[in-house]
Length: 86
Image (cartoon, rainbow, N blue to C red; front, top):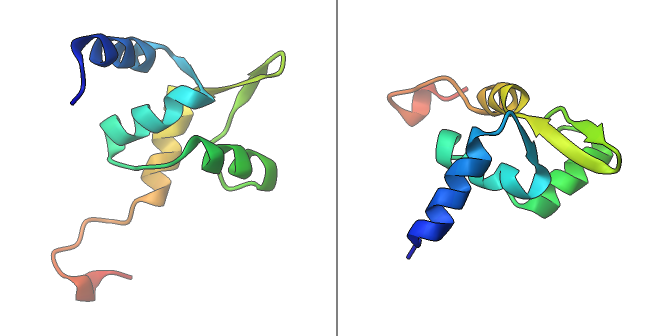
């Protein structure tokens, strides 16, 4: 069960233009339905394949626009049958 306090703090973090890595999984799940772990984002930051990020000192920040672009690139086009999936 999600409490109101947790829900409101999640909404506040989603409204920021740049998110800390720990906030990214919640944003992607709420906005795009993509579940991803913080550890997966950290691994992708090392080997590539993840969303673009910027640094503020040692802290990686992900711009919401870059997260949306990355999520759209990961999603397939809409299909009506599994046979349409390419």
